[in-house]
Length: 270
Image (cartoon, rainbow, N blue to C red):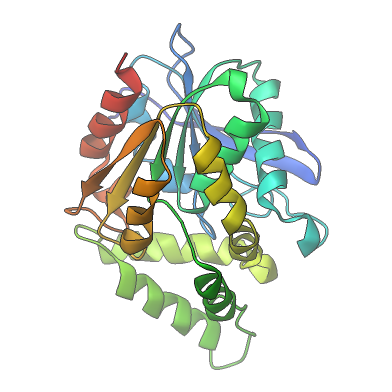
């Protein structure tokens, strides 16, 4: 949608500047806040933002250390709780009181943590997938996402590219894959801090789902978290899981209008 422009901005956070994108204008409707997976950034939502912003303000925020937000001083500061704090710092800077939250993978955890921290300001939540992991899976993921050391043969970059190609979904072009690769590289040597933060938060995410009071929609894709997302059925108490098996990784770039229709339908329901 060329008629609605996406603009980029900065504000101050605990570790330097926080970067965010906006589209649309403030209205009587809650602002929609989009929370990315790692090691990506708000760029993940760039093509979706105009479609969500037809009658409201939409914001996509880079966590500290991703996209163009300054990174924490040390890895111990890279936590879901600190990502959540950064989100509210941006929203307070914009004087935004009421929000709907859209989280994708790691962003699902940030969204629920944000709702539990300041629930009176959160209306509805969309989780694109539900990262519900067993302890055994958490241990395996920690190993799988161990940072790959730099070497002259480019092992890190070869592995990154192979994983992007392996997990890409319908409609995800090679150009989209290249954009995804570029987002990985923005994290520098801290590129895996966010994955570690997510895995360390895995049990708390489950507890947050159990006690969540806001309506929750889990959009279950045909991706690497398809099986894990199905586990939400026994935990969710105010919402539902809907399957979108025609979509996988890259769907927000490949099918932004169709994705926006599903998200706004849920957010608009009384």
